[in-house]
Length: 349
Ligand code: PEP
Ligand code: MN
Image 1: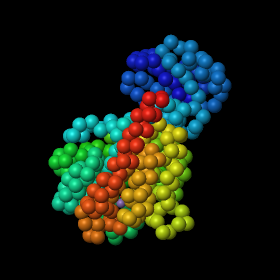
Image 2: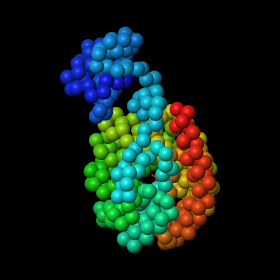
Image 3: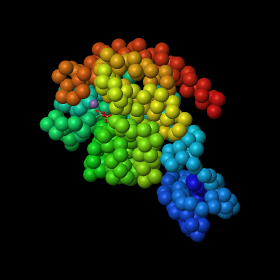
Image 4: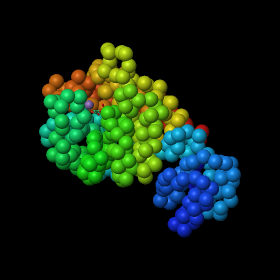
C-alpha cells in the first residue's frame, strides 16, 4: 500500500499517519520525497478498512493498494514516466524525457589519451554521456581490473573538457561515495544486479543509477532490484537491457528486445539498451541500436574505442570512431521518428 501525503505535509502530520498505520497493524517500509512525502506500507490485514481509515485523514491525498511486489517502481504507483535530470557542464540533461540519450565510450578507461580522444569524438557525434569503466568486473582475476581512482580522475577531466556527463561502474558498496564524487551516473553491472548490500547503499546516494539486467535474471528480478534502491531512498534509477544468457552462442548474449516495451508497461523508470554487450560483435551494434530506437528505448549505452583491436577489454564489440560516426549519421531518420512519437504520446497523455 502507498500513502501519498498532501503537498508540503509537515513532520508531525507525517508521523501522525505513521502512528495510525502502526495502530492498524501494518509496518512502515519507506518514506520518500521532499516536496510530496510518499509512505510505503507493508503487512497483511483488512486492506480496505485501512485504506478508508487513512484517506479520512486530512493530510492524506491518496492511499492506494499496489498489487505488484515491486511497489515504488511499478506503473501502478506512478503513471507518468520518471525523468532523471542531470546537470552537465553543457547544460541540463534529461533521461526518460524528450531526448534520446546516447551514452558512448570505451569499455575500460585505459589512458589519458584514449579517454580524451574518445570523449571528444563521441561528443562531436552527438553523445551526451561518456561511459568508461574504472572498476572492471572481469571473469578472470588475471585480466585488467581497471585504473580505479586514477581512471575516475581521467573521466572527470574528460567531463571538464567536453561537457559530457560521466557514467562509470561501481562494484562495491565501499566505493559508492568515491565513485559518486567523480561520476554523474553510477552504473551497476549485470554481475552485481543482485548485490543487495550494494543496492541498499545506492539508495543513500544522490547520484542517478543505471541498473543492468543480470545475465540470468528475469524482468521481475530486475524490477525487484530497482525497488531495493528506490525503497532505500534514491528514486533516480534507470534500467538497462544488455542481453541475457541463453543456449545461443553466435552472439555473446541474447538481446531480449521486447523487454523494453515490457518494462515501459510495468514501470515508470527510464529504459536504456546496451547493444554492445547484448551482441558482443561490433558489426551487429548499429542494427540493434536502430531496433532500440524503434522500439522506444530512452537511450543506448555503447562501446566506442579509438583503436578497438588494442582495447584491453571488449574490443570485439567496440565501434571505432569512423564506425560510430557512420552509425550516428544513419540513425538520424530513426531518431526523428522517435522524437515525433514522444511528442505524440505526450499530447495523447
Ligand atoms: C560494461 O559495461 O563494460 C560491463 C561490464 O557490462 P555488463 O555488466 O552488462 O556485463
Ligand atoms: Mn564492456
